[in-house]
Image 1: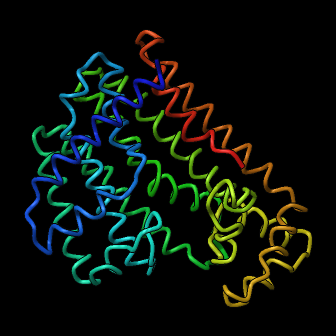
Image 2 (image 1 turned 30 degrees about the vertical axis):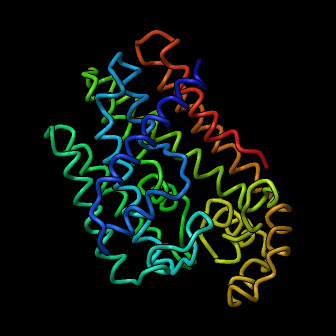
Length: 319
């Protein structure tokens, strides 16, 4: 049943997005929106809106516009993030600024944000929650840029960055679905906590897969974050342990240009320092906190099955 409920809600969202895209004007402002929204996507955040509404006995069809609004906002952030990262590809296809140009991508992204707000503005309470969480995502992106290459980046700053950049929007999507379903404030907080801890566990798991995953299984270049010098939990803890032990390999590699870094050497040092276990323990801790928050919600257990399945899907990716 949980698989079926999750699949049914993703199908609802895809159909709603298709209808929305079909109604867009055929001009240069809207063409990039149609293009980006048409790329393959898991639709996790909009599905979360529907699942939270269903959790509290509400018709998921009634919250499709707000679910779409969340997905439009998410895609707006992707359009602009790709410009900032100078990324040529998004999900294996040319990014909007590559296919068109940077100015078009900026303007189309701005318009996408406006369209998200049009959908979220029907209720002031929903708009307020959406605005707070959307601003958090922007703060997280700025923190991410602030942390790049900083030798003094600490675990607390990194955790706050991924909380804002990755976890906050999932939490907000679940909160909005619960609010639209008329859930009590305490339950809205619990479903929000479920989303936030699940988002943290997901990002930490993603960091682990980047360093220690099998590229044939993950579809990612092994050690891509290390080559880029990204201050993840793994690298921050490894630098702390290296410095305490008087080891210099990681600092030596980080002083090199990214393309000159010996990623295999860096991975070997991470393995010797035992930081994989540290990060894995944090994944498990936040996963446990997420499930604890979900279990505390006062609805029949059968209604929670789809959200348990969502958590499993997000964290069950293999190495």
